[in-house]
Every structure is written in structure tokens, then in C-alpha cells.
Length: 118
Figure: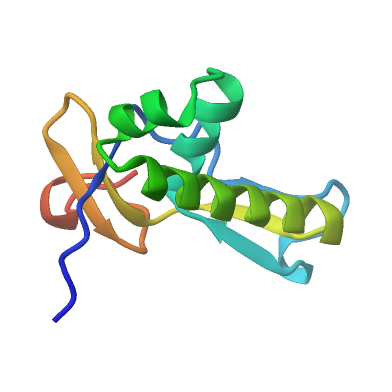
């Protein structure tokens, strides 16, 4: 049996849930789904300029796990930018730091046991 996935700490949700190329309707675009913890890894590493050791502590994961989450997030963003795909930010396994809320799943909702909405 696989070990249960430990929620990753994030400081907040995205300011927008989707990004897409201008002038093309969303229904005509392929999309990549970037999990919330992937967005948090990008924020900590690329925006706050934290090293992987410090960032992994902030997300409550090992340095290796942080590196993997970051690499996957960068690959998704690069694919969307190069191939003209829409980026949808949702889902994953994360806890909102300092609020006592937790989310697990792919719907992108915040709240205890998946209740509440984002």
C-alpha cells in the first residue's frame, strides 16, 4: 500500500485561476493544469528567490520533493507558453498555512474536507 501524501503548505491561492493566449477563445485551446502546490513552488523559488532547502521547509516537504514539484511546474508553464496552451490553476494536495484549512483533490476548492469554495 502506498504511503498517504502529506499536504504541502501554501500561503494563499492564485490571484487568477486561468491564463490563456490573448484573442483565442478558451474553448478552442488545449490546457495544462498546474496544481496549487506547483504555483507555490514557483512563487517561492522564482519570485521570492529562495533556495530549495529554505523553500522546502516553508512548504513542509523534503528538498527532493520540492525540486520535483518545481521541475514539474516549470515544465507545465513552459509547455503552455511555447505551445500556446491555457494554464488552469487548481487542485493538488495542500494546506492553507495558518488558517487551519486543508484541501485534497482536483476541484480547486478550499475548506475543511473539501467544503467551501475558492
